[in-house]
Length: 352
Image (cartoon, rainbow, N blue to C red; front, side, top):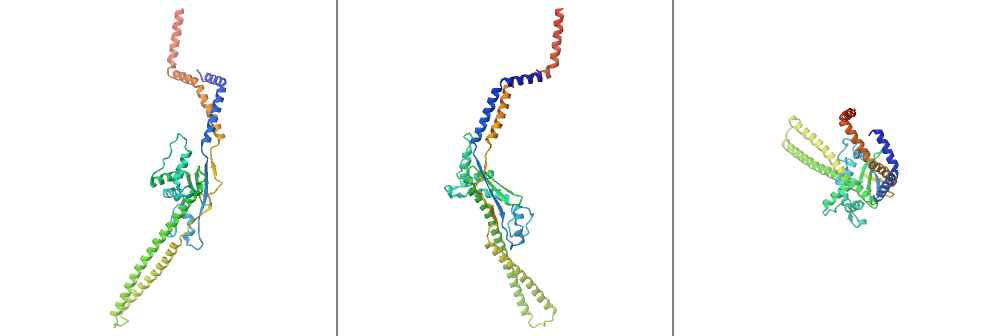
């Protein structure tokens, strides 16, 4: 069978069975359309977050946006502001698991993890395996954090703002869950600022104590020198030089003490000033974006697939015969030709 003969037979058969092809295409289109009806609608809420800055703060605060976005390699004053990438913080397991264990009073005081597991099980078909409800808090936060990882996204806009999105089939969960995620991010930076300010404060206090001990030692040396040189002429250089050096060292330590005292007051001020450094610009409130596959598009895809599948089934025997003939011709074509020629010669001789 040649390719031309195959093409002719295929067109003839498909022309005779075109009604069957149409029925199969329409059937698959209806099946795909009904399939979209079983898919739950997903809602997506988006919040936009920007960093708070103040004009009277230090130069490191003016670079807060670069530090939060990770654009700068090293902040000018690492001890004053947090310098962790806010996208990594939003998507980190620590944040996700902390959010998963939060309880929502408006949902029967259930944890977010329990609500997310229920939502996941509701959208699964009867053939899919359900997510088992964990018995312990550690397992609950692990499962909830993993589900959150698939439902939330964080990215930067062209203006450098953080865009945080959360998707779920239960649109009542979107606003409270997104707000809790934002609160966890904000609280992380506040806790980090307090911790760093406390460490700076404790360091300056230890520094001041050390400088006070040095000053006490200088005072004792001054008293000792005054007592031992009471009747010595003041112009003797072996006694004036140590006194001058002692005075110089004491002035230097006093300047260090004044600087440490200023640092202590600044650290104490930052310790008491535990204000948020991020704020929500666009809140995650309705209307939410709906995510659901188009029934018309799925129907068209099903119709095309139905036509292709039914056509292949109907012409399968023709394709099989054609492929088999081509293989035999490729492997045994020359031998069959010689055998047929010899049989024709012997037949002609017998006739003679």
